[in-house]
Length: 250
Image 1 (cartoon, rainbow, N blue to C red):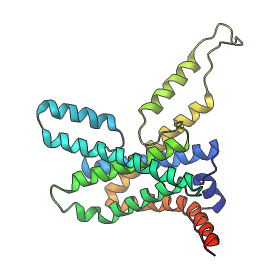
Image 2 (cartoon, one colour):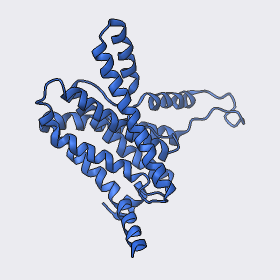
Image 3 (cartoon, rainbow, N blue to C red):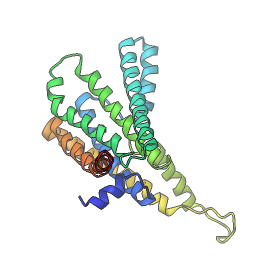
Image 4 (cartoon, helix red, strand yellow):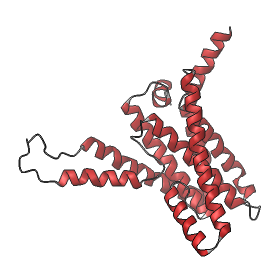
């Protein structure tokens, strides 16, 4: 990967183009983790709407064990988002180049742990599913908070409800018939935004297909390429900070 491209993609200085490109990559990663994780534990871990709804259902049915599982998943997602915010704000206050690379690096390390240790954890009855769900929810919260702060809440990558809603809004504008096309209050679709949103959905789907096929044929080790990809994105800003610290120290 070219160094300048990696620096532009995950460095402190942001552009709308870099935000979009990183968003597409992370949508692919999130789709792969979500689909592969489902094959591992039979539960999606990227969207909390289903988790909270399941908690309500299980509470009504009196299944407190599943309610506690839901609380664990929800808490892990929250902690992941909070951890991402702490890392970004810590780096921002110190003007580090790795402001957004640190959460990516942590995500990569957690994926490496899951890929290398998942098979061993699967042998522990009663522990594997809750631990795996909490780990994957933490990763999703970590990633979603990072891309949210990076893009000023313009891009989401771990769930598609809002993205597809926005696509529907833009399609409604596109199909709207203006009596006077040049009127100041004419309804106009943002075709550029529509293309970006559609690309996010396509990348999430492609990642989901890749993750599902990878887990089906390779098992837990299929997460390692995703971890290495995130490491490659994070490496350049991290090395910039290390060189800066070296110069200060000497």
